[in-house]
Image 1 (cartoon, rainbow, N blue to C red):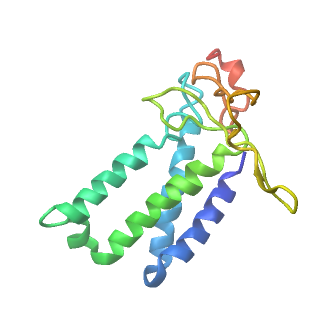
Image 2: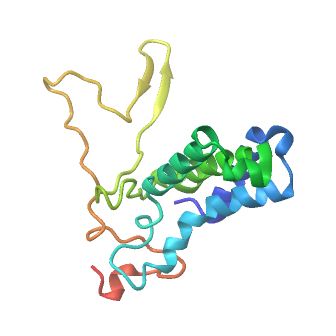
Amino acid sequence: MPSTVVHLAFAGLLAAALLGPYYDRDAVLVVLAATAFPDLDSFIAPFFVVGHRTVLHTYVIPIAVALALLYDTRFREESFVRERWGGYGVAVGWVSLVAWGVSGIGLDFVGAGVNPLWPLHDQFYTLDGKVELSDQRGVIQTFVDLSPDEGGAPAPDGLGSSQEVNMSTGIDPDPSDTGHK
């Protein structure tokens, strides 16, 4: 489970790589804020059954924001973002969305997992496996079972719903102790 510092460092790298001429202190701060946003659900965990890695670690919110930004910048006669911030705002908006999805949510898939489609589909998933390069068998990956149905390993199940999975955080180090389980 990567710390918030790791999320922010990776987002900073994404900002440096993707912002190009728009890279400045303000742009990086917006990207870092978007990346840290999902971890605010740590403060929800002590009070509700659904909490960390559920409420804000969902791709539903960034997809909705991306659709709104796409509509505003491509289909509206007068774009709010372009009129207010120009191309700078559009670039920072899209890079912030990429950092939010990849660094803010995506890094948490490794390890304990996230609930990526909550509230539409309440199931935690984790990215677990490896990729190897063999001189005899080529590229070998264990993330997805591509073997035929006969004798192949069964597809992995999810980790459980938000009612069954509780993540510890600095705010709520022992979520099973709060009576939410």
